[in-house]
Image: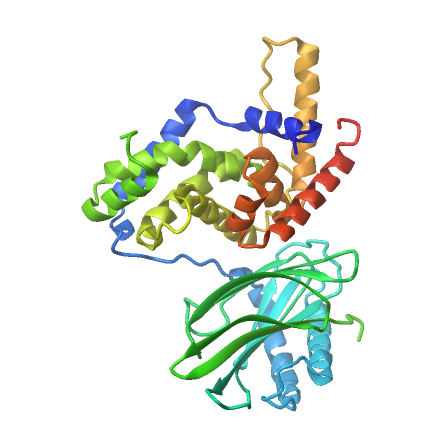
Length: 243
Length: 182
């Protein structure tokens, strides 16, 4: 690791590091904020969460919502017990992304759908990311101990582009959070970072990195609670933007 | 308080709520955290702001630190997540135009040396800003801040192989951008 590039980067970092006085002032500011803010009491834990859709372009939402409702009605033909990304789901994902891309040609970053709730992630400037969109489906299945039949408990669909860091609140519970990042590798596989924290249908948190082939299902975790076995699964499919 | 480990200071702080224990933790780690954040945001004001935010998050969540990893690893995780949130909030993950003033040159050095160094620093800043957030954080942690691949993978919550690949990819891109320098 010790080569000319590293040395250059270290030298560069040294020129950018503040002096002791600056760091001392910064420390004082932190200490003042902690002392003056009663909300920072260690017994009063507040989890701060920044959601992408804070940046939604509200002006377009009305029109988008109408189209989404139409699409959702058409999208309901997929059996809930089916856990992989079926052709119908892929086609709906492509259709949805294509519609939204028309509405927000320069701004669409990602779309998520869970429990009938749709969120759009829009950016206020063109990020010039024109890679093909990817549909990620995360689902939780369960079965009672001894049973061979898995049933679908919950699922969410997220459509995003390569290298977007997407952080969404998939349920009404503000503590629930899903963070995703996908990177296309040269050999066609995808590197996927997934972080999920959900309170229901079963409480769990998982962080996972996988190298996967598009279309493959990955088991993110499994757990058993009160005699019921749960699995958290994920599939990723490339969408054809022009479909 | 030098004789106390970070973990001991946390324990004292949680039990007594005496701010001076936390102040000592800030003093020990503020330089490293600021140095970790700056290359990822490439802006002094943002780096200062986020450094403050990291320590405020730490104090809010201090009793979630269970001592399973080193305090510094936990701190780096919070720093990385804080920067990720900042990127998603402000769309500043790729910095095309710097709001920073031009670098102040140290004219005690020879003027020509000074200008060449300044130009090189600007090139490096621009090359870093062209990296995706994930690659930039990988190269920052490993090549600049000296974390091992394993530590960086732990901080980023990914497997070691992924971190190897990220660092390799970031170095490849930087070498291309800084072709005439390396």
